[in-house]
Amino acid sequence: MSIENRIEATAKNVEGKIQEVVGEITGNPNDKAEGKAKQAEAQVRHAAENIKDEIKKSVD
Image 1 (cartoon, rainbow, N blue to C red):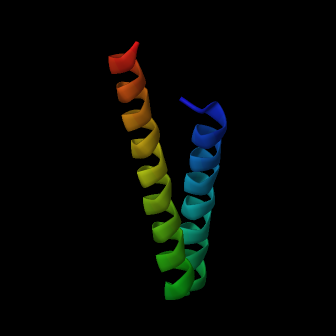
Image 2 (spheres, one colour):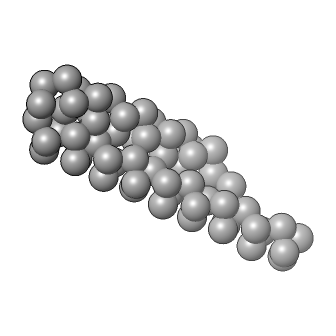
């Protein structure tokens, strides 16, 4: 498990949430969509880290 990768994924998720809210407030659908995309990317990164953790547990 890489703490740095998890931190980056969490930061990307927060960034995406903020961008999505800004898009909702300003009525900008592009910002809203980009925010959701960043959140999805963060979920994929977290899932990848979870898989790495499970593989490492199996090997150990």
